[in-house]
Length: 417
Image 1 (cartoon, rainbow, N blue to C red):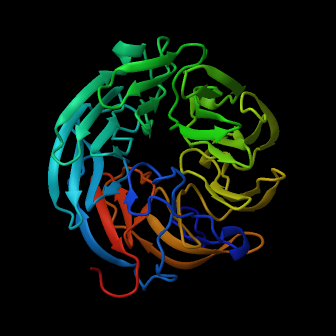
Image 2: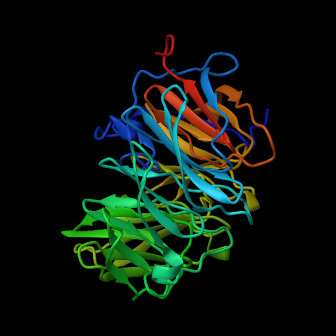
């Protein structure tokens, strides 16, 4: 049986995965890829094998609107985004899948791969969301009331690429950090309560891509790191000063996958043959040196899972890559399992969950040369839109999305509560 397009959960060796998901902010899933932006869930007591036909489907909400956006889950409320005709909306649901509110955030994207891209970011009672055409807005989380909005094209001269904008907003204390990629602001910090620009870095000679930023504390320097059209960049959070850049050329500027801070350096991966590179930070964090480049793992947009010193992700479909595991110490490929195609990944309790472009869902157990399927099911997919939303594991549930349908699955033993 060839699992070319499969949603998977991967059981890696206990020595590499033990402690991979550290405790912290366990009561919330406030943004894309969770509290640490790594898609490592702290959930415990989950099923190690699914029933025949898959875990119990608790509910389906069929009115999310068109899109690929994931969910944030905070204090018993789910937040997501969808397109309804020419408009994009932010939505709030309760844990029973009932709509609480729905508020417009500008225009939708109706060209290549139409649909909402980004997951709302929750912080201290406020939701922040960037739509595909550069409208950033803040909303009251309880009611959906808009608090402020900024148009990236007007404020920073943003010119987005072939697939619009897809950045998931980052909050750090009182700051909102993002990368408009415009000539008047490549990377910027806004006051999160007002949307007022606090600094805008224009030193970087590169334009916006589709990547979401991360925070890095290294050598006494707090920096925001992201990937633009052809460059990995770092900016000091306090001042907005450019710290370093490193070339990262890609076809069509297709840099989507979030970088990872690991072993005193930055892991960055992009598809279409670009590959994954590791940049070692200097002791003061103000420069980098490339230590390795692995061409097998050229991740398009399914995300990476870092477990110990092993990095797992799907290679690019254009080069018929498989599911790849890279040793982050050496940069060498440990295995490349060719029976798997493009996957979006998440992790919990020794399992890697993922979803393929057709909605097939599986659990995999890792061996020395690849993975073995333990369980498998398929979500009730309707229509021709691809399944690109990353899985979310939170509260004993697995949240999956296809187009306008959001599915909540029960993944703990016993009946759903």
